[in-house]
Image: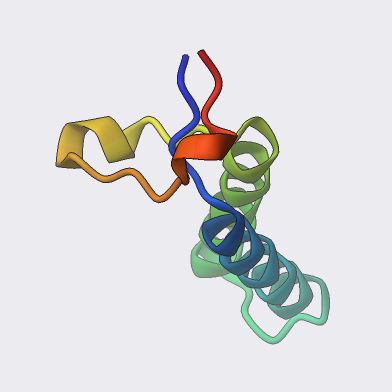
Length: 71
């Protein structure tokens, strides 16, 4: 599995995950939408930790610089 998530992309994903988690845990967004945001935030954190997004290859996107790619 080659890395396809760059550092800027990771930072954006982590910030969004924190925002989604905050919205959920402060009861600003509740119900199904709140749960969906929480699950999406967890997915964003996971993909930033492993530096791979399974949707990117399907769309032909790669935000990882050449020096950070894993072989």
